[in-house]
Length: 203
Image (cartoon, rainbow, N blue to C red; front, side, top):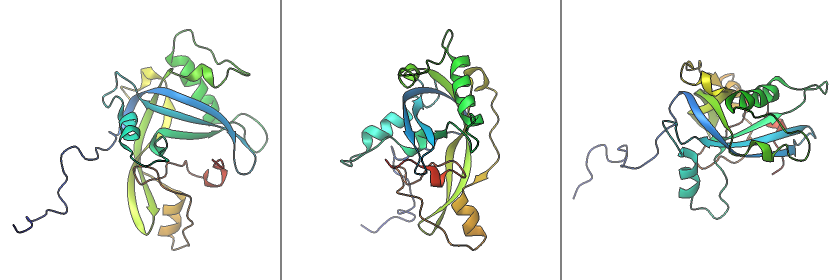
């Protein structure tokens, strides 16, 4: 048999389905405290799409389908949030995260101290996904990434954000050298907020 026309470009059934742009209902799987490579305090938030979301269990399926022995939770479902700015004061991103969790879960308040990380497990929160241009391994890539957290009541009416660009993509467009920011995740992409590349934790 001769190879059918457009065979190589044709997508097989059951292959990769991208994250839909706009608002999503999320469930927090895990929160960890860690430090960045430069010694700054940060939290790492792992999430999935909630049972009542249009793409429920999306990232768990990715994780389960990953056959590598050293598989990790998808980068696309991982957020790194610095807790303090250069002056040692609370960052806006961290306050946004904790406030959105409180607003999305009736009766919930953040438990500071030893129970901080555990108190978020299983809690709901909203997230807004948008397109982002990246440059990796000599290629321009268009990704669907979490742009910011919102309260659950804001998910339905959330607008799709304007296109954003990673630091690597901006440097590529300007003709500069493009550093390697790490190993891509299961979907082939890194999900690192703009300006945070040098702050990633060691592990």
